[in-house]
Image (cartoon, rainbow, N blue to C red; front, side, top):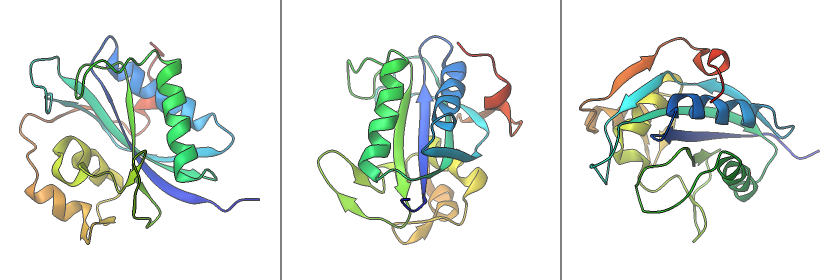
Length: 173
């Protein structure tokens, strides 16, 4: 049996019931035989980043225990995005759901398809704030998530759901 790996994921969306979509994506991940959701951040409401003329987002992070390789985990995330009707129309544009692989064990890799750790995660408050909820001491690029967060722009980011099981109790969209 393949060994277990620990990966962190960033999830977000801003079309339709975006908070419900993030919750649904987590449930779908947790229902897989090869992935167990072991930690989930609070749910955050965040201003748009990159392309700012769009609706605010709901964002969360999760830690999964998985038997999947990094690329297979990415494929699983993309499959869930497709199942939830994600359309990739413009970079940083509106989306029903987005699931990014942030870290995978202590792996560092640069491939066209998947870069680990996620290349922009250390500059994004909307990733670092939820990630710090359950992994403040996680080391990324030589520094802890807590350290990266202390320098990140978190302007406007607010807690939308503080309950640790918000994703399990929210009705599916």
